[in-house]
Image (cartoon, rainbow, N blue to C red; front, side, top):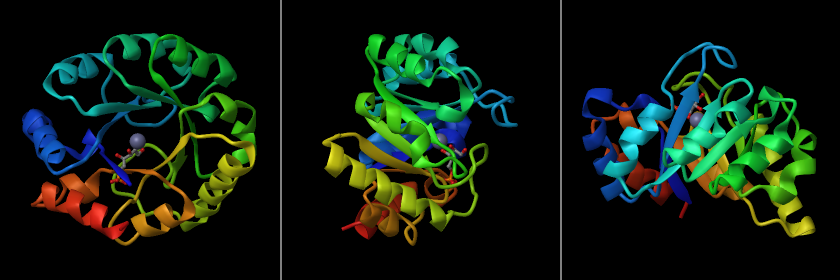
Length: 216
Ligand code: DX5
Ligand code: ZN
């Protein structure tokens, strides 16, 4: 399982140190939650943060856009160093165009679904994505409780990979801890985001190791 610490729960004053810690601990991706105060109530950070983070780490930058009409911003995030860009199907009437823009900009394209959105809503674009993010909480805040009902959608996507020959990664985001990550892996998830579980702890490196261990 690839581990993607979410900097939403990091200590922003010591961000570089936090990033180095999780990198050394073996986390492969760095998850960056962009919130616009519109698609979700909170406002977090924008493309400028990505520009600042890119030179200080070689980790894969996994950008989760919780913004309305993301197609307006994907090129800027790609230019500023995003490796993967995720767009919510609920945030635009132009999901196909948004994914195409990401690919044309040279980044990996990810489609995201909320807990209330069925897999059927993204079936027409599954052929073109590198990653699918199944939200395991409602987006907007760290520290929420994992929703087990979402596991069924992970299984469904894993099944579609086999029957249709797709090779996208399946990512989970929200409420991931040592006691929830195994069920995600068993259902077919290949990438796990974790924010509060890692950064709210005294030993973030140890938490990364525990998550890795829990899926073995
Ligand atoms: C929630 C964000 C998550 C968040 C996860 O809207 O998309 O990436 O940081 O936080 P935890 O792991 O604390 O649920
Ligand atoms: Zn996220």
